[in-house]
Amino acid sequence: MAVRVRLRIMREDRRLDVVALLNSGYEADSPQLMIPVDLARVLGLWPPPPLAREEVFETAGGPIRVWVVRNAAEVKVIAGDAESKTVRVDVVVSPLADEPLISDVLAGELELAVEDFAKGLWRFRWEPKEKVRESEKK
Image 1 (cartoon, rainbow, N blue to C red):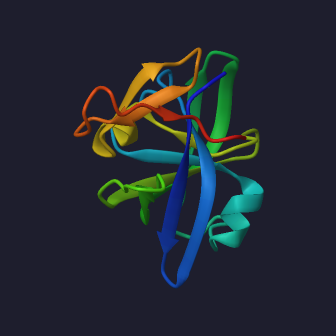
Image 2 (spheres, rainbow, N blue to C red):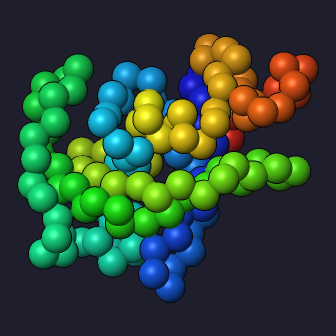
């Protein structure tokens, strides 16, 4: 199991709810949301806009080529009875991604606390420790 949360992505006049994987191994220097090309199309980010920068990210599976669009969207976690604050993100478009991935910095900005990766349990940092939430289905 893994920790997945319902994430609302807001870009210009678009608003889209998706399930995104919390990836503690996705280390970034800014709040980043990595998305597949099909989702980038829906958000108007594919083909890459002129402001997109092509970069190579090092991953556990080897280097991948991605397109980074700085400050491209805002996101927040929607959890039924609570939501996170809204965070401005850099959107990273990857042809290899098969689901949206939340970077370590973005997870911190969204105030997400993982209680158990194996069981898919999490909470918002500002919630009591007894308030444990279950991972969303992929």
